[in-house]
Image (tube, rainbow, N blue to C red):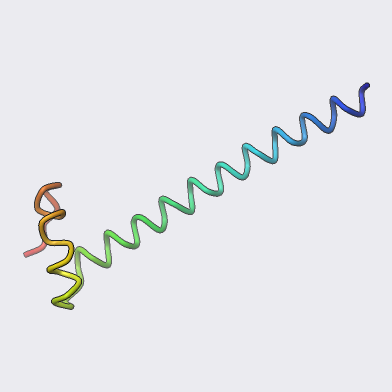
Length: 61
């Protein structure tokens, strides 16, 4: 019975650490995408994200 308890708590720890890694990864990816779209001089990227940037008050000009 104690072996089952140890395995259960290990599974919870793995799940929490996996969630933390996924959250940090998503935040880094999101920040990189916003930075790239916000400061890109490529016309296609600028035009694709233009309205979204203005609606969220992100400066682009």
